[in-house]
Image (cartoon, rainbow, N blue to C red; front, side, top):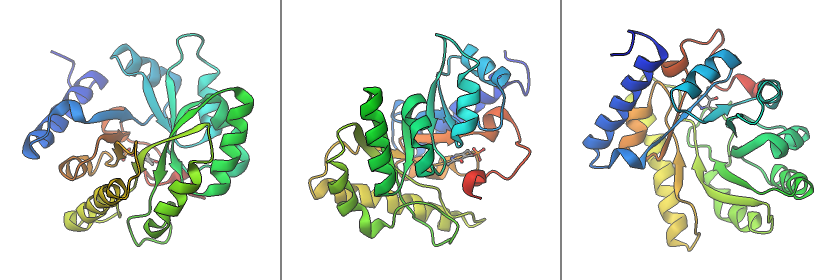
Length: 240
Ligand SMILES: *Cc1c(COP(=O)(O)O)cnc(C)c1O
């Protein structure tokens, strides 16, 4: 038995909740990946999580990702960029990230592609879509998605794999669910329109991942439920 309230016990509890949500939705638990979000937590916490078998970690600032990456050698984990990425930070992302889930504009795609070509690398990307009316949210307007994906095809170092969203911050589960559902429906429409390779839906965080799974999430991004409370607000802290 893991020690109560250890990272191990929190991870086990999250996995159980993922499995239960999958069962409710008639999905296999293997359809949903856990992306631990390590932003604000130090390398100690990362090593602890790695000892539990976790290998990919979400970060929302390139500077923090770079500082952490410098403390690993050949045992480095995979870094997944999930925060708003300024165009002038594309180089760091192109060098360090295994994946970018916050692609939301064509200038960023262009810059990432150029940097990746220089590095001789390619990158999996998810397009971040705005599914809530809150003004502070980053993400592409859903109406722009088809055009955006068509333009992305020109960037050979970028491999679009799906969509990502943050739900509205609300106590009303129906409002939160509606955001997740709209992302799934968008993906279905894109598939019907012939867009391929959009297998992934990254949606759901510590406070809402079960709703996201019920609405079709293939990847939940979990920070505080695994690592503990952060000392600053959870939503888009990189947004300033
Ligand atoms: C911080 C963050 C998360 C994780 O948030 P928690 O509420 O701690 O699980 C997920 N996605 C994004 C984009 C984030 O910035």
